[in-house]
Length: 151
View 1 (cartoon, helix red, strand yellow):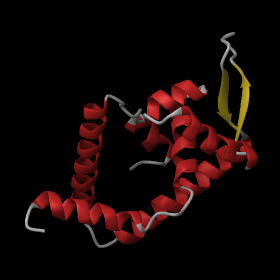
View 2 (tube, helix red, strand yellow; view 1 turned 60 degrees about the vertical axis):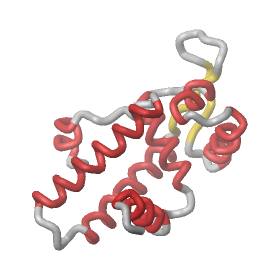
View 3 (cartoon, rainbow, N blue to C red; view 1 turned 90 degrees about the horizontal axis):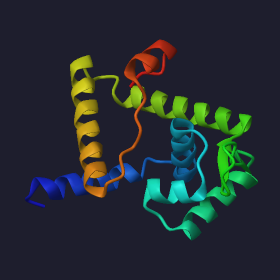
View 4 (cartoon, one colour; view 1 turned 45 degrees about the vertical axis):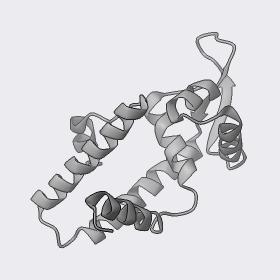
Protein backbone atom coordinates (compact mmCIF):
# COMPACT_ATOMS: atom_id res chain seq x y z
CA UNK A 1 0.00 0.00 0.00
CA UNK A 2 2.58 2.53 -1.03
CA UNK A 3 0.47 4.58 -3.46
CA UNK A 4 -2.04 7.18 -2.23
CA UNK A 5 -4.73 5.52 -4.37
CA UNK A 6 -4.18 2.28 -2.45
CA UNK A 7 -4.70 4.17 0.80
CA UNK A 8 -7.90 5.76 -0.53
CA UNK A 9 -9.22 2.37 -1.66
CA UNK A 10 -8.51 0.85 1.72
CA UNK A 11 -10.12 3.69 3.66
CA UNK A 12 -13.25 3.69 1.46
CA UNK A 13 -13.52 -0.09 1.98
CA UNK A 14 -13.39 0.51 5.74
CA UNK A 15 -15.98 3.26 5.45
CA UNK A 16 -18.43 0.69 4.12
CA UNK A 17 -18.40 -1.19 7.42
CA UNK A 18 -20.05 1.76 9.17
CA UNK A 19 -23.09 1.86 6.93
CA UNK A 20 -26.34 0.21 7.83
CA UNK A 21 -27.56 -2.66 5.70
CA UNK A 22 -30.45 -1.03 3.85
CA UNK A 23 -28.41 1.61 2.08
CA UNK A 24 -30.17 0.95 -1.25
CA UNK A 25 -33.53 2.10 0.14
CA UNK A 26 -31.97 5.32 1.42
CA UNK A 27 -30.25 6.03 -1.89
CA UNK A 28 -33.29 5.20 -4.05
CA UNK A 29 -35.64 7.25 -1.90
CA UNK A 30 -33.17 10.15 -1.87
CA UNK A 31 -32.97 10.14 -5.66
CA UNK A 32 -36.75 10.02 -6.08
CA UNK A 33 -37.12 12.88 -3.60
CA UNK A 34 -34.55 14.98 -5.50
CA UNK A 35 -35.85 14.19 -9.01
CA UNK A 36 -39.54 13.73 -8.33
CA UNK A 37 -41.47 10.71 -9.55
CA UNK A 38 -39.37 8.32 -11.64
CA UNK A 39 -40.08 5.26 -13.77
CA UNK A 40 -38.06 2.06 -13.53
CA UNK A 41 -36.33 3.07 -16.79
CA UNK A 42 -35.37 6.46 -15.38
CA UNK A 43 -34.02 4.82 -12.25
CA UNK A 44 -32.07 2.35 -14.39
CA UNK A 45 -30.50 5.19 -16.32
CA UNK A 46 -29.80 7.26 -13.20
CA UNK A 47 -28.04 4.42 -11.37
CA UNK A 48 -26.58 2.54 -14.33
CA UNK A 49 -28.22 -0.66 -13.10
CA UNK A 50 -30.25 -3.20 -15.03
CA UNK A 51 -34.01 -3.18 -14.64
CA UNK A 52 -34.11 -6.58 -12.90
CA UNK A 53 -31.82 -5.30 -10.13
CA UNK A 54 -33.95 -2.19 -9.69
CA UNK A 55 -37.13 -4.26 -9.71
CA UNK A 56 -35.82 -6.17 -6.68
CA UNK A 57 -34.92 -2.97 -4.84
CA UNK A 58 -38.12 -1.11 -5.71
CA UNK A 59 -40.23 -4.16 -4.81
CA UNK A 60 -38.72 -3.99 -1.33
CA UNK A 61 -39.65 -0.29 -1.11
CA UNK A 62 -43.22 -1.12 -2.15
CA UNK A 63 -43.50 -3.99 0.38
CA UNK A 64 -42.24 -1.72 3.17
CA UNK A 65 -44.72 1.00 2.21
CA UNK A 66 -41.92 3.51 1.56
CA UNK A 67 -42.87 4.10 -2.09
CA UNK A 68 -45.83 3.52 -4.35
CA UNK A 69 -46.26 3.02 -8.10
CA UNK A 70 -48.72 5.32 -9.76
CA UNK A 71 -49.74 6.04 -13.35
CA UNK A 72 -47.61 8.72 -14.99
CA UNK A 73 -49.42 12.00 -14.21
CA UNK A 74 -48.31 13.32 -17.61
CA UNK A 75 -50.03 10.46 -19.41
CA UNK A 76 -47.00 8.33 -20.25
CA UNK A 77 -47.22 4.55 -20.43
CA UNK A 78 -44.64 3.84 -17.72
CA UNK A 79 -45.73 3.86 -14.12
CA UNK A 80 -43.80 6.08 -11.76
CA UNK A 81 -42.47 5.59 -8.26
CA UNK A 82 -43.10 8.22 -5.64
CA UNK A 83 -42.45 8.37 -1.94
CA UNK A 84 -45.28 7.65 0.46
CA UNK A 85 -45.71 9.62 3.68
CA UNK A 86 -44.00 6.69 5.43
CA UNK A 87 -41.16 6.92 2.88
CA UNK A 88 -40.77 10.62 3.58
CA UNK A 89 -40.62 9.96 7.34
CA UNK A 90 -38.14 7.09 6.85
CA UNK A 91 -35.89 9.23 4.66
CA UNK A 92 -36.00 12.16 7.09
CA UNK A 93 -35.21 9.88 10.04
CA UNK A 94 -32.34 8.15 8.23
CA UNK A 95 -30.88 11.45 7.12
CA UNK A 96 -31.09 12.84 10.66
CA UNK A 97 -29.43 9.67 11.98
CA UNK A 98 -26.64 9.97 9.39
CA UNK A 99 -26.06 13.65 10.16
CA UNK A 100 -26.08 12.96 13.91
CA UNK A 101 -23.47 10.25 13.42
CA UNK A 102 -21.31 12.51 11.28
CA UNK A 103 -21.53 15.29 13.86
CA UNK A 104 -20.29 12.88 16.55
CA UNK A 105 -17.39 11.70 14.40
CA UNK A 106 -16.43 15.22 13.35
CA UNK A 107 -16.94 16.83 16.77
CA UNK A 108 -13.19 17.45 17.20
CA UNK A 109 -12.75 18.92 13.73
CA UNK A 110 -12.72 22.64 13.04
CA UNK A 111 -15.36 24.19 10.80
CA UNK A 112 -12.65 24.71 8.19
CA UNK A 113 -11.61 21.03 8.30
CA UNK A 114 -15.22 19.89 7.91
CA UNK A 115 -15.77 22.30 5.00
CA UNK A 116 -12.55 21.15 3.29
CA UNK A 117 -13.50 17.48 3.76
CA UNK A 118 -16.99 18.15 2.34
CA UNK A 119 -15.46 19.97 -0.64
CA UNK A 120 -13.08 17.07 -1.36
CA UNK A 121 -15.91 14.54 -1.09
CA UNK A 122 -18.05 16.59 -3.45
CA UNK A 123 -15.19 16.89 -5.92
CA UNK A 124 -14.49 13.14 -5.67
CA UNK A 125 -18.16 12.26 -6.23
CA UNK A 126 -18.70 14.73 -9.07
CA UNK A 127 -15.59 13.41 -10.84
CA UNK A 128 -16.95 9.86 -10.55
CA UNK A 129 -20.31 11.08 -11.85
CA UNK A 130 -18.66 12.91 -14.73
CA UNK A 131 -16.67 9.83 -15.76
CA UNK A 132 -19.78 7.63 -15.51
CA UNK A 133 -21.99 10.16 -17.27
CA UNK A 134 -24.52 10.06 -14.43
CA UNK A 135 -24.60 13.30 -12.46
CA UNK A 136 -26.40 13.18 -9.13
CA UNK A 137 -28.75 16.07 -8.41
CA UNK A 138 -27.63 18.23 -5.53
CA UNK A 139 -29.84 20.45 -3.41
CA UNK A 140 -29.46 24.18 -3.46
CA UNK A 141 -27.28 25.08 -0.43
CA UNK A 142 -29.50 28.05 0.41
CA UNK A 143 -32.57 25.78 0.58
CA UNK A 144 -30.68 23.35 2.84
CA UNK A 145 -29.51 26.11 5.16
CA UNK A 146 -33.01 27.57 5.29
CA UNK A 147 -34.48 24.22 6.32
CA UNK A 148 -31.78 23.56 8.89
CA UNK A 149 -30.51 20.56 6.92
CA UNK A 150 -27.15 21.81 5.70
CA UNK A 151 -24.07 19.74 5.01
